[in-house]
Each structure stands twice: as structure tokens, then as C-alpha cells.
Length: 292
Image (cartoon, rainbow, N blue to C red; front, side, top):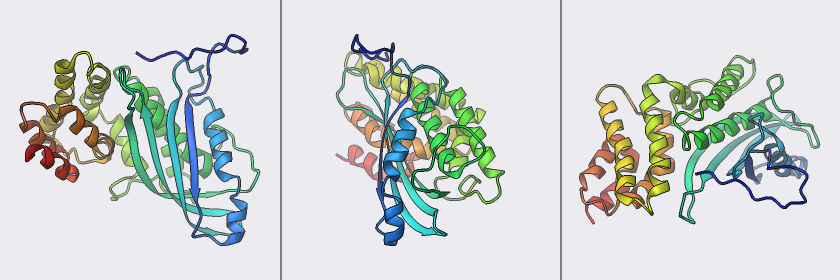
């Protein structure tokens, strides 16, 4: 169901090689003027890196994945050391719809790195806090995209993200890679994704997209059945293990509004009671449907 790019005949390549279509913005209002000047080309440097790197090592035959990195600088010191919070989103087309599906919607509060104007950025080298952060999220974005088109299709990219997380955690002076008690952290996300207890969830994740929202226009009943299957399986899993980890939270932070849209006219409203059990943070959204 992925669509190949139709390229102009005069182009000297067969298809687009890179995977991401990234937009980077920055907010440096908290920084002194000297640091703002140093960051004049930072957003463009990161966009060029994200959009010109072939993360999979293969020619990408499909639509480039639209994503955003909104960077909010919180501190700067020692000439080239920065701290920032980053909001990251990614999107996926939906068959038969002009509205894309939000795949990732997270805020990472702990990014510290070194940056010099004009510095070169290289993909996969010795640990670098600047590029490894970008690489990690590139692999997460690609992995989620591939999991939505093939059952467990993103595993090889999630493994790459895991390797980066392990390297970061083992590097002196690095930050943000250790497991933490906060509601979101990088290590928690990738550990959950690769945890066998979430295997069924990842299989349902594929069906939610490929046999759910992608066929909603033509086969609404079947689509809703596959969306509901994911919810019911999570509810069943909840009775056996603690599901309130980073992965489930990240999923619903991106998908809660979408799920309401696709199920709001479903005749059995008890599904929204199930949603309240597996996704308490978004209870208000589900109550709006139950008590409408």
C-alpha cells in the first residue's frame, strides 16, 4: 500500500534514496546573544543531516517520512555546550484520506550536546551526543513507519536505535540514555518496543494501520474490528503485566484523538471504557464520547 514516487524522466536516479523529510525549528530565546549567533545555521545543519542521510543503508522506494524536530534551548555554556528540550513528531499517509496519521508525538527533555558553527556531521561513528540523538530518533521514526506496513517490519531499525542507546549509556559524560522514572525517556521506549511482552501489541499495531485505518473508507466494519482488537488485547495484557510503560504511553499520546475519530460512531460504547483502563491519561477524551 506504500506508493512509489513518480519521478521526472530526466532525473539521473531511479528513486529517492533518503527516508526522511524533516523540518527543524529552534527557539533560543533563553540564550545570550553570543550563543544565538552561533546557532544561526543550526536548524538548517540538522535538516540537511536528517534529510541527506541514508539511515537504512538502502535506496528508499517510498514516500519520505514527514517529521518535525522542534528544539527549545534551555542553556548554553563553555562556548559550544548546549542543553535543549525537543518535541518530535512523525506522520504517515492514510489510504483514501488527505489526513495523515500521527505516528510519534513525544517531548524529550534531556538533550545535551556540543555544537560549533559549520561543524561536519557524520552518520554512525564514535559516540557523538549531537548526531546520535538524531540517529536514534530517525531509526525510531523509520521503525514505527515500517511496523505499520509489515508485521514487526521495523525490528532491524529498532535494533539500531537500541545499539545507540546502549552506546550512549556507556559513554562517560553522556546524558539522557539511562532508564528514568520520568513519563518519557529514550531507553524506556526502545526497551519496551523490543520487549517480547509487547510482541502482540506490535502485531496489532500493524493491523491497526494496514488493516484498520488504511481500509476504513472501503471496509469500515473490518477496520474498526482491527482497531478494537488492539485495545482489547492491551486490556487483556493489563491483567497479566504492567503495561504502563513508555511504549503504551507514547502510542496513546499520538493515537488517542485518532482512535476517537475512527470509533466515535461505533455502536458499543463500552470500548471507550476499555480505553480508559489502558489509557488513563486521556480519559477526558473518551468520556466525551461515552457521555455525549
